[in-house]
Image (cartoon, one colour):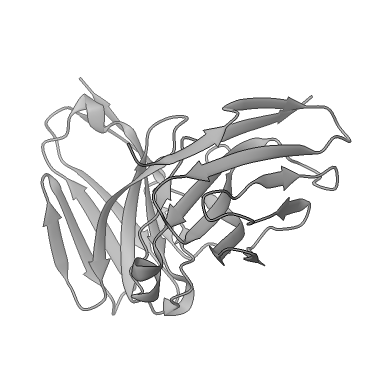
Length: 117
Length: 113
């Protein structure tokens, strides 16, 4: 089955620690995205990548870093510089065909919930 | 930045009733999408309506788009308890084709059996 796998589902972090959230897709999608969701809120874009070895900052990139070394993988690191990292993190992907047509439909993973202790 | 704003923020109805959610946006768009999120899960794409379309149907879903008012509505007919979820509208910022989508804050729908 094609889809997006996020891991871990739950993660606890002590203050001052960096943590990395994994996102893997087998949909052969070119573009990948990381969103953050706070309770009762919508999604805010952290980073996105349209092709391998290239990525752009979203609206709330401070305190986060990403890499895109493989088409299938787009890991997100939450650094100690992120002041309020407790949130639900969602990874998504889309094909370049739909993105370039202006009708970009996203496929989402099940999410990772990060809690800072 | 939030492009879309949903209204109402929360909606509670009885099974069998219709549910209507509204979305307003700020800039010009080439399409608008609706997504559904079950509690604690990822989002699932429901339907996309292009800027040159006024209405679109998919099963029990009906979406309208009024570009002059910069608004869209999602109607779920004959609701079921399984429709309980949060619903989000999403648009490309400024009609761009970078692939980015900006999501509203969502409407939480509760359907009581």
